[in-house]
Amino acid sequence: MKSKTYVLEKEYALDRKTAWQLLADNNRMNLYIGLFPVSFRPAKQDGAEVFYREAHAKVLGLVPISWQEFPFQWQENDSYTVERRYLAGPMKHYTLKVELFDNAENGTRVKLTASFVPLNLLGYGAIWATGLPAVKKIMRYLDDYLQSGAATVFEAPQKTSNANINLPELERLTALLAKSPVNGDYVELLHRYLADKGDHDIAQIEPVQMAKLWNADLDDTLRVLLYATKAGLLNLSWNVICPNCRVSKVEHNSLSELEQQFHCDLCGINYDANFDQYVELNFSVHPTIRQAYAEVYCIGGPMITPHVKAQQVIEMGKTASFSIPIGEDALRFRVLQANDRVPVNSGMESNQLVYTDRGWSQSSVNGSRDVSITNSSSADIVVALEHADWNKQAVTAAKVTAMQEFRDLFSSEVLSPGQKIGVGHITILFTDLKGSTLLYETAGDSSAYGQVRNHFDFLASHIAKNSGSVVKTIGDAVMAVFHKPEHGLKAALAIQKNLATFNETATETLVLRIGLYSGAAIAVNSNDRLDYFGRTVNIAARIQGQGEGGDIVISKNVLTLPESVELLTSANVELEEFSAELKGIDAAVELVRVRLVEGLVVEELASQVVSNR
Image (cartoon, rainbow, N blue to C red):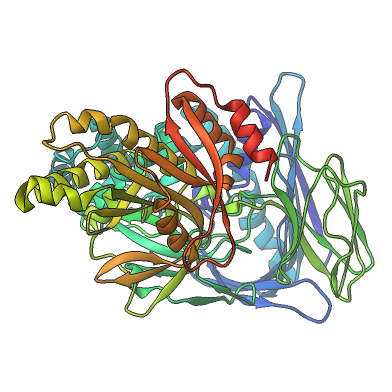
């Protein structure tokens, strides 16, 4: 049968980034234009050809069709292509290419090229009945967006019905949430979101996207969602995400259901579950409010993997060129399935790479211009240009479990007994009262114990204000956890700065030692609470013991972070370098003692510490 190709072009008063975010969000777009939901089977590979995924659907809910869907190919904000080879139904082959061009009026010209190859005469009818109308509806989707007056893509038009909303229950639980210690404006925004948004959005609420929609701080947004879950408006789930396809492999209602390893059937790769890489927190509307389901229309599309800037299929013996986005950092090339990676480094001389069956030809590539990649392996490959820190778009388990609100509201959320989940990077803070034994001798047991308890509340307050949480108390010491080093340092500075004010209300003057260390750890269930163990925890506890009182002891690595240097500079501190032999640690650890002083600028001191490493 002869192929049929249709080209549609139209200019829109939209910038290319906005047009891209709308058109490359295939799940949302396909739902809006009325396409059928799809189920996908694990990835397959025939010989040396690139892998594909089998997809199955029913047109109009009646006619079954199936096809091989090959990986999307795209360059962010520029174009994408999807290819389907049909296994059943009246069609044989289909490709869609979406291209974006700047126009003279600072808008965007959108060009759609759809090619259909029918299998039989019925295929021609299918093209006119469903294929071509669906392509035309893509343009209509942009028209509807402009007519809706939406300010951002997060407010894109959706098809929704309010018939299944339990409004009395929504009103009752919203009033209950309003009594929580959260921003009342966000409570109202959440109420409207659950009432007005489409099923897909309320069945899969992503905190990062919600914060962008509300133009709100992510931590403030998370607090509202956590309290809303406690009130019964939402459910939370832990999704184990494959880093290749960004599809949720398993959804758990509790951390205790997590398994240490998981397998991606679609990509054929095994992974160890990791709190700060592969385990993400999502929310959904509680079924007593609305029955909603997140139907799947597409996997592997550009907006499902927003960390991927470009992706191409490179056949055996062929060469492809990738354009490195301006102003982007921490980029790398990765071969899907094989998971072979090579970083983009502007300090390198070569901008050419070769991929063989043994891997990449070199350990880095120059990213200041277009990069040429030649496939000299024995099979076709899919190469992605992506951000190495791909999980910035999600709230990971490492982040949310470090929040005090989470521990307070969901204290039963722990791993199963004996389970160990890795955390690639976490910051541990230890505090200790200097001279606590003398405190009990001079103040008496009852008075001293009361002061220790009050000082726990003082510490917990400053830890929580800086996105951390108290893991446990050990005698008169506190162990706390933070998702980011700068959060821990900010909390430590606030504690030492405000301790004098706290002491004004105490019968005895308290002096604190604080140690702070960042690195990898293991999350476990200990005494029915989420706890952390490993070398990072041990060093944090040991370096706290190096404190002299009134100071903060940190590793030199903290001063490699611009955020940390900025905090220390604004706080006016004195830095003292030293190394220490720590019990149970093989080599000496390079440390920095931080003391609060007045009128001292530390930019030069911090630079000197870093340069001496």
